[in-house]
Amino acid sequence: MVLGFGAVAGAFQATGGNTQVQHVIHISVDGLGGTYLEQYISESPAEFPNFLRLATEGSATFNARCDFDLSVTEPNHTCMLTGRPALQQPRSATAPAPHGLYINYDPGPPFTLHSIGNPQIPYKSSVFDVVHDRGYSTAFYAGKQKFDLIIRSYSELHGAPDTIGENNGTDKIDVHEVIDWEGPDLVIDNIPKLVDKMLGRLVSTPPTYTFLHFANPDIAGHFYNWGSTLYRDAVKAADFEIGRILAAIAGSSALANRTAIVLTSDHGGGAPINGHSLAHARLVFTVPLILWGPGVPGGVELHDLFSNRFNPGPLYLDYNAPRQPLRNGDSGNLALAMLGLPSVPGSIILPEFKSGLHILRSASGLMLRWPMGDDSLRLETILDLTTGTWQPVTEGVLSESGWTQYRVEPQDPRRWFRLSNSSPAEGQ
Ligand SMILES: [Zn+2]
Image (cartoon, rainbow, N blue to C red; front, side, top):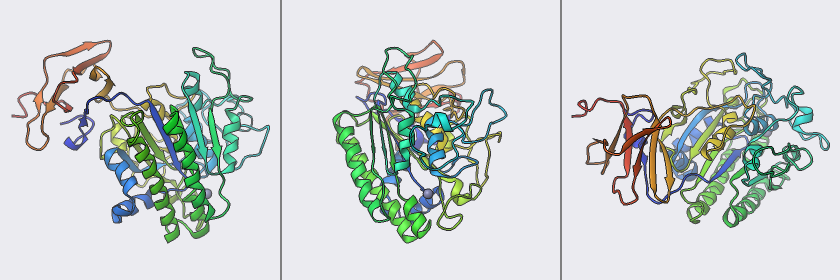
């Protein structure tokens, strides 16, 4: 049995010359229901080539969840950025957990997430804090003016002091841009403008962490209902913009093989008609969550990558359920994990990768490593997936500081590796 990734298709392809993830683009496609996206991709893959590409080259689920209590935009984006539930205090949490923001608009200055959210948490740390406090750059692009609330909350005036290493200041978001929609047609025009801005920065001085929000398909859903032809067109428009982002990554040597994408949505919709306020409705609470980038296995159901996440089927689960689903609230900490950074302080929505194979890339080659201590695991390699046989790797496998590891030298022709727990005799 291959651990974690179950199939040969899920083995890591170790292409040479890469380095680890240095840039993450965290995308939220507003109102993109997982049920709709899954249907569109399976029925008309040619019309949604870029969502399809993310899901086949990366790991995806169309059955993640939004927040349990609230299925609206501002609270769910706050979940994504803080790793906290909106309102529920899980029984297992030892400290105040929910961010507490329940309104879905920006009340304007001087209010912030800190002042109007859960008063037991005077400062609600975010992905921006974790990245910026370590001296890395951040950017935020959104298609609804109400996101000014988030920008203000992590601004020079309201951001927390940086107590980690060198002082990078209280202004946690280096670059931000909001281009609001002005009507169901103009929202379509505004998304390319927003992506233009985002790509301009990404290609010239790529931020370590970029958050990008598309206002559609939510707007189309409100005007024409979820699942309508115009809603579907809005999902296609998002697909087109994702294609531009993927092309920009591929076309830049600074970005290619060093950039990961984490894509999700704040909520689905269609319950009630033209809306998404019914948090217990399956069409509303079901959202996609896609992870794409170097080191991410292709074509795997995303839940399978985690030891503490389980595909919920049709269930509507709160934060006390013993088997937690992936949620959009996992996406911020996933972005940080891809960058090799710690999770958001105080966050309790914490996905844990299965103890599978990790790849560290550097100019001197690749280091494959997995947690030490499980003697039943062995590294195997194959030259050609279509004709070869998996062979054990025995020489050069070393254990130190909690890890068992193996270095793949740059000139090594072997490109496919997997961890297996079958005994050496079994495969013969
Ligand atoms: Zn909406």
